[in-house]
Length: 345
Image 1: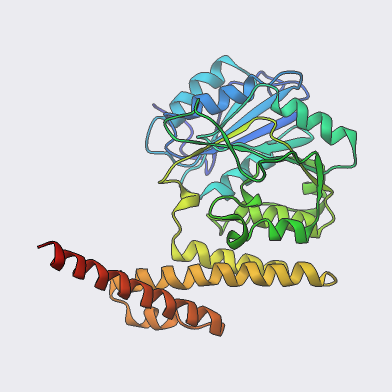
Image 2: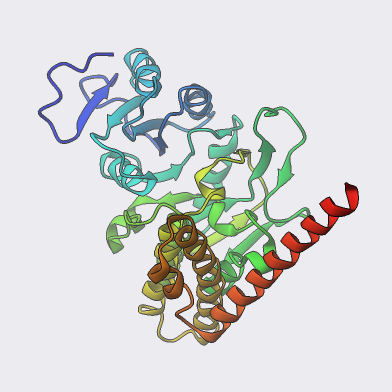
């Protein structure tokens, strides 16, 4: 696809909006960062456009895809003024893409949607009504998870198999809900995709941390809670998260985990008078630090970087002990495999 006339801009915009800026006075802006998502982006966008009883605008930020993602969205934008396509000149990650969409959003509420996920038709109306039924700045629904390739298969809930009702969420509740030791891998509250008051975000200057490519949602939601956001969690309204083994959230690089440790340090710097929250943030930081140290060690061994391998052991004593334990576990497993091979010969 040719984008003639746009390459002299640092960030260029393609839109199918009408001269007055697209959907008139939308209630909700759905923001979708997309990178190489040509096979799923149409389903994601269409699920947002199909939302009933609310006025929706959809902003897709193509993060310098190398496939036809931008072409697919551009075709849709030309036929539907509710869709806007923003194209990043280089890949900057989902946090930067979401921030770009936040700056362009016209609605009083925003909600993130991943490019490989989708929503049931009545979801946003239910969240919108709930937001207006109480003093809520952030309204999140427990989401459904399905395996990639089986979007119509049975759905598993992320958070609870029992009814939630309307559960107020404070900072300790939220951070505890992000401890993998308590909730398993990819069962944390940071994966939620809530409806958020853009007025609240703007008033407090809250945006996604663009240095993060893992856990940027966790930091944004936690920061909102620190700044006084009134947050509630309710039963599934119809967000369907498609779980893929190669997703960014399931494959962590050392630097991404390091940035998440730094995010907890940042939170500790702004949480003063909540001992329970501070203790849980410290626990989350330690949990993440152990994973970071292990990944640093793995990457150092792969690149034969002895200095970085030694650096992986620096930190709280429990981090070093965790590394030693994992090394012993790996040595045991390798020895067991060798013995098994010998016996089978």
